[in-house]
Length: 312
Ligand SMILES: *[C@@H]1O[C@H](CO)[C@@H](O)[C@H](O)[C@H]1NC(C)=O
Ligand SMILES: *[C@@H]1O[C@H](CO)[C@@H](O)[C@H](O)[C@H]1NC(C)=O
Ligand SMILES: *[C@@H]1O[C@H](CO)[C@@H](O)[C@H](O)[C@H]1NC(C)=O
Ligand SMILES: *[C@@H]1O[C@H](CO)[C@@H](O)[C@H](O)[C@H]1NC(C)=O
Ligand SMILES: *[C@@H]1O[C@H](CO)[C@@H](O)[C@H](O)[C@H]1NC(C)=O
Image (cartoon, rainbow, N blue to C red; front, top):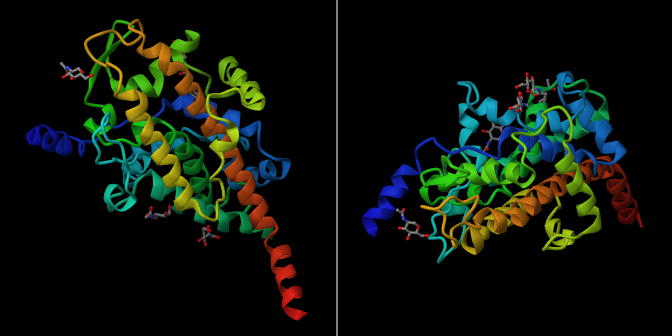
């Protein structure tokens, strides 16, 4: 047993981890756009490079391609956090133990959120426009991507490199467990091969009304119970822990090998989880950005109030 886990531990250092498929990231961004305030939309349009036309949906997949370039390879490990736990019997995530030197998705969300705060102030001051500060455009693109990644249960689990090393079969295709959660399950819900990377697709659009109707297993208020961007590390850690818990509650507690996951019942019970996690990512992303913009734009007013109180 010791050897087994030691082996998995060393294998988890291999660069094999992937991410929600890129078009799923696009769709999470398009869904989030639906919940952005007008003010947020206008601010983000100045932050993003012009080629995205102000769309965080179009920009949400950039982080994957960037991570695979030589220049962006430092950001590769920012897409997940490897817990050192034993699902399905024991799930837990510890920031100091599990976020290595060089970063992880929790640290990256916190770091890039802090950067984006200063960028919003630059928009407000009129110095940042048309995406003329790449540090800022990158920060927004990373946040739009990582708030997606952190809801994928296997992005908050270190066992077998986030399930990348667990061979499985899905619809007759040999793959691995991580890829099943990144794409196979969500595509099979509606029988599509992929989603658009240019505009919202019908199935993600249908999730929008379900979010508004608040009909998921967990109430939407709980999805955004931690959504104050001035405490980004605390919230990102809470989101990662919640995803990590799914690996005990479902991902590894059902048989995931030897049978075909599409037809053996595994996928069917995973559908509502994936639908909720994707919807959650979209609402969280929008809430996070809306609150960031409000906080930065009202900063002066808040400071003014503070000043007046001090004068009394
Ligand atoms: C969408 O995907 C197509 C085909 O892969 C690609 O040519 C196009 O640049 C992509 N668009 C965006 C906004 O990423
Ligand atoms: C924080 O972000 C900056 C700019 O993207 C980057 O250079 C730095 O490595 C990041 N630090 C961490 C700990 O993620
Ligand atoms: C771009 O934004 C970053 C983050 O706020 C800031 O540190 C940097 O000074 C800005 N660059 C320019 C040229 O304004
Ligand atoms: C989606 O799949 C179709 C059919 O397989 C393909 O033609 C198209 O290029 C794909 N679109 C993207 C954005 O990958
Ligand atoms: C299949 O998964 C079960 C746990 O669900 C595990 O006990 C068993 O060893 C696995 N078999 C193989 C061949 O990986």
